[in-house]
Length: 332
Image (cartoon, rainbow, N blue to C red; front, side, top):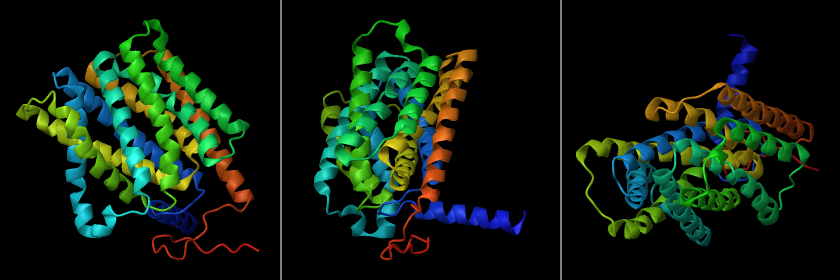
């Protein structure tokens, strides 16, 4: 490996390492990496949840165990960072985020109990469209034609793969739509929260609030899970941590509307899990749609990176942030 390539890899590693810190950044390539990791984690979470629900566990209990084991697995981080991890100056936003997240999870898990995993995923791709709209209204982000086009093309690719319109619109579809809407609101909210809190803190405090909140409705349908399901429930918590920690780093690196564009990369992971775990077969249109989605995401990523470099909008160092390793950018 040449010295130049080694320096590029070292710079990329430094960028990824610093991306979880609080503050505003503009790094589309790092955002694309983290969101891809997040979508893989969320796809695994959905597959485990679908299987557990198929074994007879109520979705309300699934939500609780997902949050409970996520919190348990994050306790070593609390020990390492201390009580500061559980404190914030924007707890009012965490309350709103926890309420919306619970509604989104409840609707999503209920939809999983009523619909095939692939169809739930298809309708969830409405969330980036809602997120872009809320990012414009709430955060004042400027969304230009290329980003709207990438969203539209990615959505078309999702519909080519999953073609959800072959079944009637029923209760499961209503739950899936409600989940997509609430998820769309959460995206810009998370972006706003990254301005003051780092990614790990946002995930920990959110989970700390969600675990007791999700226990209350779960008690009304409570049945102790069989021992064979416990590893899967722990796995759900692990996948949730991977997904949310990576997603928060993605939001810290780029605009909420751009991050929403990258979330279409979840689809190939879902297709693979659906085939391997649930026997859902794929056809040529699956791969046509996947190529369209990745083509749209790759184009917008490169385009945003070029624009950011040309306009001198690379990440500015926050001198109070010891994790940010980029040089100070002076503006005159």
